[in-house]
Image 1: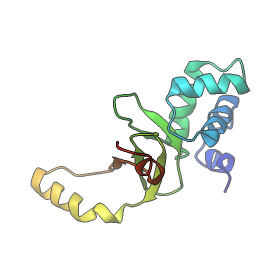
Image 2: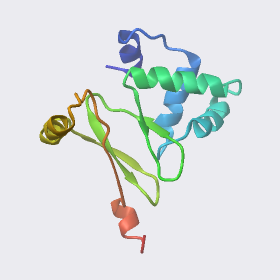
Image 3: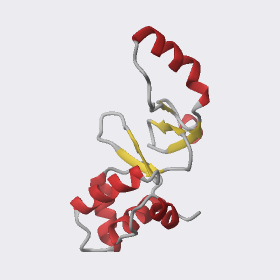
Image 4: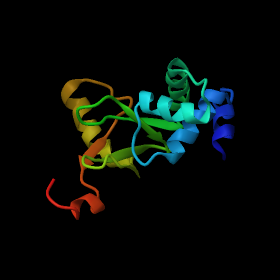
Amino acid sequence: MSWEERLNQAGWRVTMPRRVVLRVLQQARRPLSPQEIHARGRRIHPSLGLVSVYRALEVLEQAGLVRRVHREARCDGYILASPGHHHVLICRRCGRAVEFPGAEDLSGLIDQVERRTGFRVEDHLLQLIGLCAPCRGSGPA
């Protein structure tokens, strides 16, 4: 299913800002901040506004098309999201982001946390930070 179909299925329209944001993220090699998406998006569509980028990211995240990732010492960045539940690996040197599948892998830990705290866990976010293979081979971290 295309991203346009997924967006429509989630009840959202395909708009110019959403199209530009997805195009920018498709071309990105690392997570991008909203400001970076805006700057790159203006090369595609010069009238793209920063507020439109934020609104597009919010809708695209709700529709499961983009994922917010946290970067060390910087604001959030965004990457394209794969269907289903995934976690993220981030290279702390080059910033590359890679998804890996997982939901059931944390069920034992979540059960334990719920028993100890009395919380009812509804969702989770797991992000691992390290060095990708190319960066491991390029010298000390």
